[in-house]
Image (cartoon, rainbow, N blue to C red; front, side):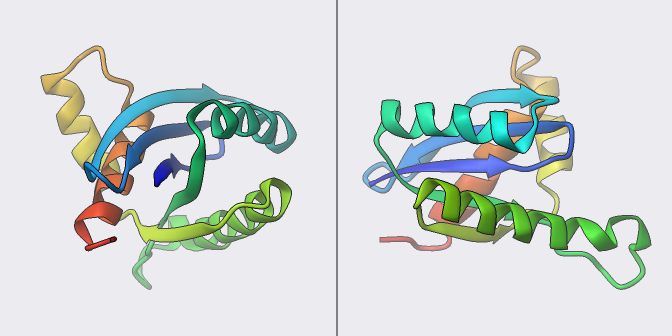
Length: 133
């Protein structure tokens, strides 16, 4: 089964791809400053091209004292519901805590890597490591 990982952000949306056979996630690409409508159009192309069966979206798990990100979880959950309906695809939400920090560290080792696609890769790898079949 082919799976697309998504690191959702208001300005940047990173993508990664992997499959349940290898359980290895790889960064794919990043879209910058696209509307939801345009991003969904791009997702449709990628889903068809890579024969994607499932979307995995990173959701921020916020601590009560993290007031700067209080609304982001709701925004990501609404986005996940929207793409599930628009694309008629199953979507799973994965805790994305610390993926941005880890992606920044990875980028230091691999300077050509895009931080948002690397975050999507870490989100998808978390999904695989969780023990998906």
